[in-house]
Length: 355
Ligand code: DAH
Image (cartoon, rainbow, N blue to C red; front, side, top):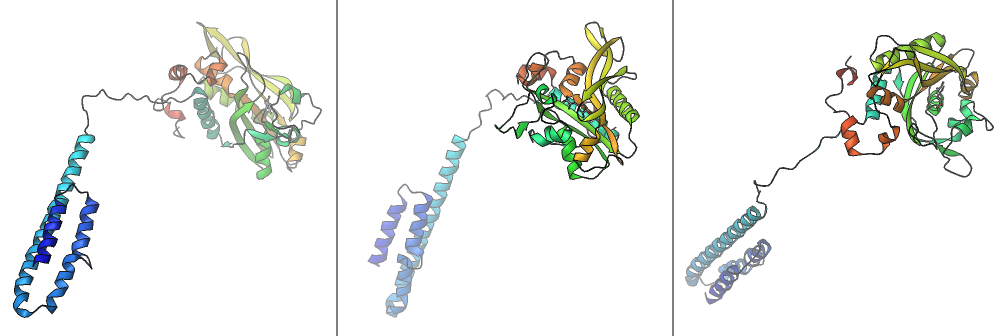
């Protein structure tokens, strides 16, 4: 008896100390585990003389119960303490001022890219993409721009290596090459994206945006090109009538080539597209040069078509009355707040294909 009484006293004393959950569990194992102190006492029962056994068993059981209760109470105490501590530390101060949050805006360039993609997809163009880092072949050579061609200088190229093998694409036209190399004709695609030239002033930024267009099939002619651009400009500027003129021009990758101007006038200090007798250049275009088709293994006596390249930033400036191109890329939050678009305010006609 004195043995088990001592065990009880020792452990009750222990349990009265300041313990954490792990230490209590350890005590549980010390007492009731496979080789626990009390478990071993229970094992002795069989070898005790029968006259003493009854009393010993009764004492042992009462000590067992006492210790088990003490352990249970201790665990409850610890848990309650933990909860109280949490309540104290994680208290919500309802008197604090609320957090302000600001909703993001869609950048005018992103908005205009969505509008352009939506308009062209209505008439069957797919959207293609190409990388900003291009190789010299796709950007120039395959587009019928040989080494000595002056267009290479005109483009003020950012080369990325001394061999002039890699560069930041100077236009979106290399996406024409990538598209035609990976598929078979017919092709009817647009390719919006970032382009780069070493140039910076109020109307030029070293990084700007273009959208390329390419339509190749068996019977495509300049009439289709004209119809397509006319449709696009009317849809984009949301006007019924547009004045448009094709000026002869030169690009190595098209023959014949043209630049397209649209008519406008200034009304109350604002540009009104489609009226008046002033002209604004907005894009380059032409019939794809047979050499370009040959370079991508398309037979020019079977297939032909048109291509165009439009400056996106210029279109955004015109449509939304923004007059300094550089502000587009300065990331001034106040500017974006003013000129940006609310995600939920975007005209329904430009959200998905809901038209
Ligand atoms: N790549 C030309 C430029 O950046 C624009 C251009 C002109 C694209 C005529 C074309 C095209 O696809 O046919 O100046």
